[in-house]
Amino acid sequence: MVFVSFDTLREDHTSYSGYVRNTTPNIDKFTKSGFVFTNTISVSSWTLPSSMSWFTGVYPSKHKVTNKYTVLPSGEEEITNLSHVSPNLKTLAEVFKENGYLTGGFTGGAGVHRQFGFDKGFDVYIDDKDFAGFEYTYPKAIEWIKQNKDKKLFVFLHGYNIHGQYEPPGGYDKRFVDFEYKGKLTGSKDEQKDLREEGLSRGQIYLTKDDVRFLTDLYDEKIQRADELFSKFIREYKQLGLIGKTVFVLTSDHGEELYDHGQIDHGHNLYDELIKVPLIITSPYSIRARKIDSQVSSIDIPPTILDLLGLLNSSKMSQQLQGKSLISLIKGEKVLRDVFSETDYRYAVFLRSIRTSDRWKLIKNLEQKLDYLFNLNTDKDEKNNQSTKENIKLNDLNNIITKYLD
Image (cartoon, rainbow, N blue to C red):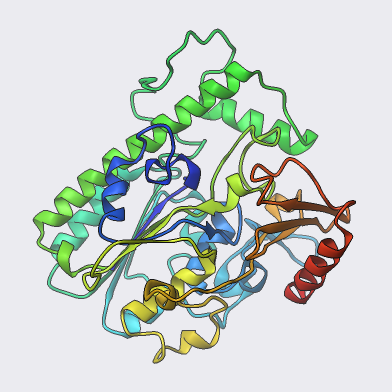
């Protein structure tokens, strides 16, 4: 079983979703033989909490790995570790290990570093280089797989190639910059960090249309470069003779704001550009590819993986899972579900959202007690707050989200 995380990949910039650029030709090939979930919403808008939800199968507010540091009663801070804040939670890797699998994680560190507890249940966990890309992680994964190819394997492959704190080796080739850019931006990680911090402190930044176009061009280049590296992994994986024996899950932990709402980066809000992510699942038992438009959550990925491999009902982890297996959707059933997301990013924002099956969305600012209500049927870009006009809908969604918060 191979689980691939393309960190920071927003769904609407994949070419298979209809994006204007051919950014993901190699990911697209998996859509020809797998199940493509076109409406997948992440439980959070940044790496640490959303990735931990993959491994625990619970929302961030339950696994409690919601920030890099936990404030103790004494006022001191300590690094947030799953085993400290939620010691009774089992992880996906532990379940695989208990069922005779070798478990290997090959990551870019930083937000998925072992210091937060991500290595729990893994026999091998690589995280020694922060914000590393697939060019660093996939060869290590291939070498480990090659050494153990005759055994049952659970592989977590992760790369930061699309992240703002990653710069391509040798710099950008600017393959998508098709105009003479005369602005001040370069696309460096230091610049990205400064813009992120300015947005976090002020609530917005100022960029020109050409600035946004330039940053978007560089973002798309990073997507295509990540896709190219993924193709190298797949090519070498095929040479091992394992491709027809493997369940693949391809997804992302969160998206990226590209000035859609006045900022860049992620974590700071719960708009769709930050939480709508790709999800493709392939199985050796798949008969035909199919697109599934029903709304699902990233919290559904762990039970789906266990269900596909026949481990769901026998696992003690099943008692803690808050998501639902997507097997029924894969079999063709129609399921209507509301989904929830949350972020307490660096204790600077405290936001919760509900995205309903009839395409209404409420973002609640818990600290400032503000509501942002959007009708995604007519306002997919989330520009028109309807909270003062749609009182009945606002009350309905507030009642649902209150139960979720409880």
